[in-house]
Length: 194
Image 1 (tube, rainbow, N blue to C red):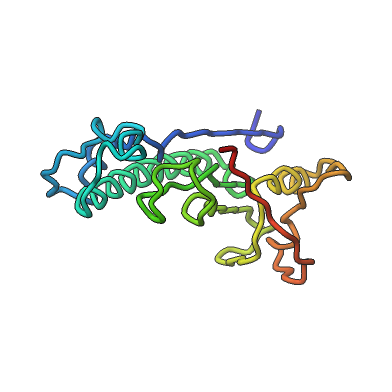
Image 2 (image 1 turned 180 degrees about the vertical axis):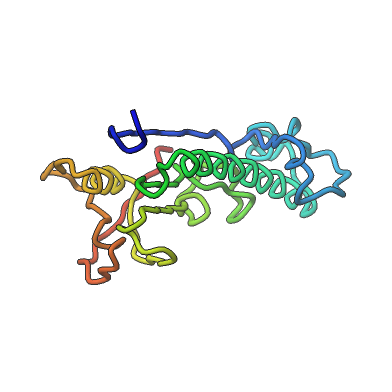
């Protein structure tokens, strides 16, 4: 079928950025090409030895691990660019809702915590949420109202013209994305199963 003839739902899941922080070249040295220490991707692994205190990283080690993480972000960003280029070249980009988000952040020693799943501090619970939908979402706007990941389901359903179940605790973000900043305040919730 020609572009736009049929509905399309595409879910892309990338593991990066995620431990192991092992970005491929040239992303492995993109943000730190002078490190000579011993806390390599292989040694850091899933961070268990740092979490348990078996390895106590120096400030320079932490800087390097963060650089590897940033390399993984850039590696992912390059692939996102390829996907957007594909959609553009096939006439799909301007009639497509793009949503980019993550399930968690990472801790790099802040508050004495490492990796993720160990605390509910901002570095672990605040994640990116980027949405693009030409003609429906104005470009360049920033929304500071706290939202929750579960809000994506009713948001995507509403943009798709599908019925949004009435009994959800989640709310559609369409009004916020349309510029309505007069939404009723609500509590947002995070939980840690320790």
